[in-house]
Length: 541
Image (cartoon, rainbow, N blue to C red; front, side, top):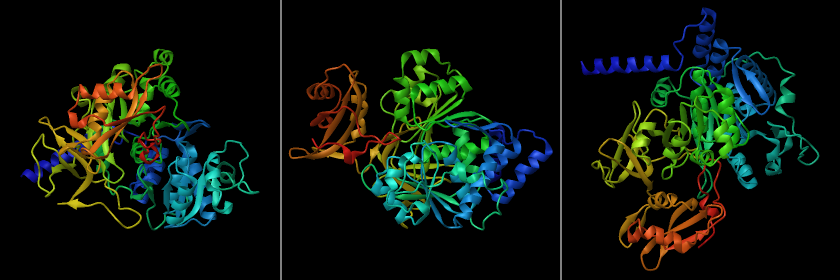
């Protein structure tokens, strides 16, 4: 009987979320039949979602970007044209297409068109060096490279015949004597009708951040059913046909997740090639956007945006500010909500794990540093070194099981599992209310004078200093203590903060073994587009 009750509850929950995101909304019969036919033909994934949205809402705006506006029917047709272009260039099932582009329509078109051919999309980080671009494309055996014109200098050693331009900036950049053809120019020669469905599904390879070493390719297969959508939108309450400012980069797992899952809601997506906090506020105001997808660094920039822009822009439509990519430092969540709306949903997860926990605005008001609670059909356990559960309040290694874990690294390796649960590599604990707190990476933990210290705990303390704009803390070797903490600090403009000031501030607020032994003052921390500090680029201290 309990299994029957669980089944009933699960289906009731599914139907509730389906109604919330508009999947149960009434439509003209021919539109419903068209959407259903595409889903049956293509299965769950990007191609089916685009075709289904175009069948249901052909004249609704799908994308607003720096090039203008596209409706869903226009987007579908241009994707079909690009699919034919790639097919004519020899891209087929199982091939790989490298993509180095910012957020815009041509990136969206490239991803979906490549998957319509049963090929792999290699989403490269826009901060990747020239050597990394070449190395990753060679390692993943890319048959074609599609990139924005601004990135051509990073691909000088790649054959121009194996390249296409996504975004043209009219700079006239060339590789040798040749300019690779542009998507916009090539697609016009082909009809907008779809090619037959390939025998295999396409997929996306995203790369780990590479903050401490060479990025690794992580394979992201399409979901096998709709339950992952139910889990996500049950925790982060998107509605049908939302206007979404998708500021997080699409090459990163967070931006990609919101793009991919968001397609099922038939949204209007606002994509800008570069993040500008004042532009984001104007977009929310002008288009009455209800969803904003960001990384924490963007949240910080929005809080610090021009005061006149904040005052002039009406952002009361903002229901969801979905954040992930790095930890929320200090009081950032509450500062953002105090400045704008009580809308922050913080997603804790990783490229490999998918989601682990999600914190809603109420969680973050009660405990600003929490990572939240496990969503529907997600199991999270805190285990000790022997793989045994630890009680609430005690720190251990975070393990997770869900339906969105990655399909393994492209080098054939994977993560470790205990009892079917993936080891996240993070340390943390649950409080008495069932909220998760992440202490830091297990390999970041410092043993100073015999005491376990996590750098993130000191970072949270220093972030609260009124004269500190940014900070990162890392463990370093120490002759006296074995290990100790070192801090790289960015003072706020106009202040005269010194390393001694930082140390004295810490002494008054943390245990002796957590006080930084070394402090370096910097103008800016080297961060990647998702806000993570590139540790290998920090100066020695």
